Length: 150
Image 1 (cartoon, helix red, strand yellow):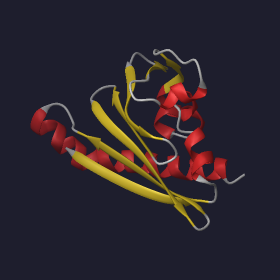
Image 2 (cartoon, helix red, strand yellow):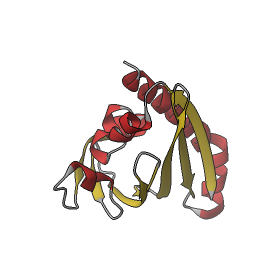
Image 3 (cartoon, rainbow, N blue to C red):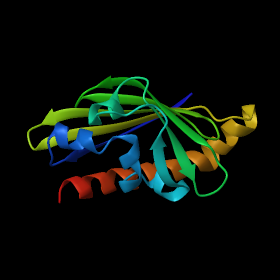
């Protein structure tokens, strides 16, 4: 399994950062979602805003093409950490960690994934895929920072 971790400091409190981590807000800042999906809709019941962040909450990415994307929250500690499982072409575990710092929040984006196709997938991942994804994640962090520091 490949693990990529990137962090950025954002001049906003963890509570403000937390609000933008809901599935239906990912298209505002997350480059991969912006590129591949026209929207995200909850498939679990959402009666209150907090329901969007609870363990077991699920959503479906509405694709621009034919790629299916399902999301499910696996861990949620309000204003501190949220982990969700994403299944698109392959399985991905995404964790956002929020740590208060003097000027706001240290936001850490952790992605764990395993490429399909056995040895071929591992070769493609090392040669192309990981570099491309790292660029997407870096742009996503900059987008998040820009939005929250307005």
